[in-house]
Length: 155
Image 1 (cartoon, rainbow, N blue to C red):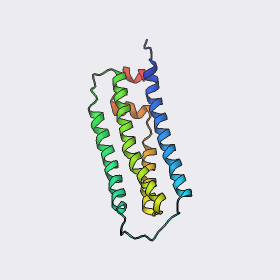
Image 2 (image 1 turned 90 degrees about the horizontal axis):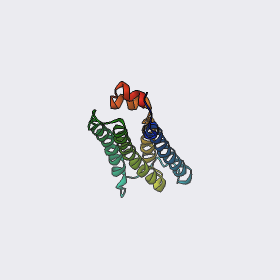
Image 3 (image 1 turned 45 degrees about the horizontal axis):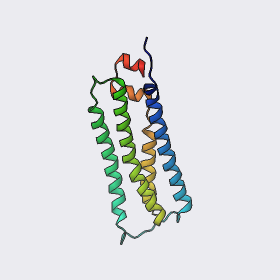
Image 4 (image 1 turned 30 degrees about the vertical axis):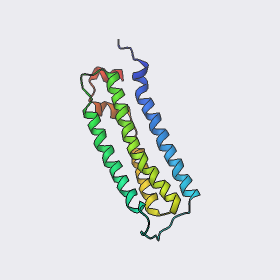
């Protein structure tokens, strides 16, 4: 008989709560910038606006870095480790991925709030939607960690 420990039961639930909080807080900030900002400005000048280059570059770097570092962190998890260690490293990898997506989205919404350029809001919303799709699940953890049958039952 396998006795489940609290940490193993709570690992995915905790990660899900963290993810939901990050998505909801970013969505609330997006709504705040949308309703509290200057509104959409479709015509804009690229002169004297360094953020027209910075926001898209930071967004792309955040997206690709999140994918690269996440996969690197997952491959670094040793299959011979115990389940508790694997789940802790899995949480760390996911939180890193979430942070690398949340930061650029937050920057995009901040810039939208300052000048209303539609491009910034679009970038922020795209990153927000992608972050929302990265929701952790038990099935995803089993697949990505390549858990053995006994570990799957423990999870």
